[in-house]
Image (cartoon, rainbow, N blue to C red; front, side, top):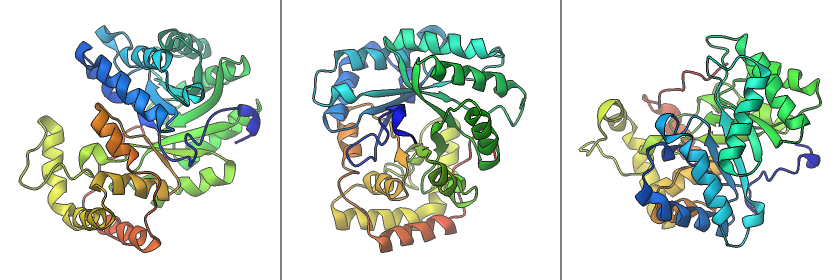
Length: 326
């Protein structure tokens, strides 16, 4: 990544952790003060990259996630506030077909945020169902960068083959790709172990951001074979996966006890050890404190190897995002 992008990645002094707030789609007014406290705590402790999307909190909520994040940033009065970096993802909806449609979408996001977007990202590739659609939208992302409306351009759910094509397209306009988001955790190693994205990103200076680093809560220790389980499809999925990942969960627990950490903190630290920026969400101050406990220490090489081996042996994995390309 070139220094002239002036984009704050890595996001901390040690460059390890960011806050993802897709959960705000179910926001209610009583959460306002709590979420502001969460935001302030994160910034105060050096977390300056905050990730959202224009599809989070849509419909009647009118882009609630971006609106709240912008409000929190404006009202934040703690150390490091000047370093706040807000990233949002623009969805390639079927009705967004032109480059101007993405420029308009970004302007709407900026209005909700009350500030320009620092890092604008393509939320997903349309390569799996409408490969022709995204080229105009990528031109729109490039237009935003050239006009100085954003500081950096990123992607999400792209595999190496599609990434190479997009990189060549943007490079013709002199625009670097700052970041790439993929689903990555101990239960979702596919983007790195099978697609080889980390090595590719390192070669060209792209930071790899890991979303769902706790596998929807499976890597927190909250759920066991005896339950309780979430409702609906998620609960069904957990019932299938949890019995098959007990060796991994047991080892996470052993490491957590040895280091006086939680299972979630060990799982997040593993993501950090792999050179990625995990973006866990936090609905409460307590959850934020738990997430912050994943930094300022390191798993040993032997612990990482053991977790790698158990993850590879696991018969059950998290379902991959259907938009992830190769």
